[in-house]
Length: 426
Image (cartoon, rainbow, N blue to C red; front, top):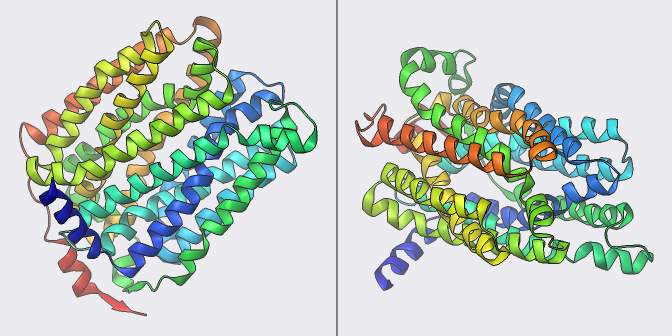
């Protein structure tokens, strides 16, 4: 253990100033996102809308992110990594405020479309930013620590968020489950998100040469490596379809099935975020020892039995325990696999390949929530869990057959070498 901690600390000390500023921003915005993800569904339900509308809003948001991913990849190259991260974060904050200030149905849908664009811009920028601001030794640690830090911040956000409507309600003299209470809480979220963008302004970014922004470069890469690119993306696509069926509704699941109040659900999701963070932080040394793909396959395969227990447990405590274990196992491989993808992609194609990865991740979320909301209204959560278990099993098998059984061929030289050859400092 002491050796692992020493290695971890030595890798963290290698982080660049830009990476450290990014992590500070992740902490601040992660708290805000934790509150938002907990309360937004309840906010919509408090407006006398049902789970079908909640699912439709999730679908619209993800559809926007899906359809705009490739354009956002080009915009990220045009604006640069720093400006893209700032712009994406600010767009998300202003759309949250817009939904609160004008809580009509058409405004909710409009703001979710714009919100999806902001999320897409941030998402397609993050992976190229992290790989371009890290060396080969600390890269996996930076990806995992970034995700783990966000989850830890979400732990704080969920803990606070479960009680925030009660605090707002006490000041306003209204019920804690009223639209007014949820609105006040979400306005605080928007303000916190704005504060979280401040550290990004201090970053000093490398300047990419024009050849690295060539319009046809991503298409050239896809033409050279169509099969390999498809293998990189397709398992994520299958996973996203399953995730979109369930993950937007976890708070609704615990309320409807186990009749738990908001503070209990908030604490449960908060500790779930902490469990995920621990899994993410444990991933880099495990990946160093066993390999990135083995970590991806084994962690996702082990999570599936706990997914079944989560959905079909007869008691709340058992379902909650399964939730913690499943979320830690299933998500610990995500930043490791993102690192794997970026390491196998040529420098000039990174932003657009990141766009394709974002599209794959958002594809299921664009369509699955609407389907899931309808299924829940008609049949409950049982069929939803059955579908998710099947899809996660398929995606795990695809990772195994594509990359573990056959082994991926190294497609290009070190990204670090490309970075040092092709970048100048502004």
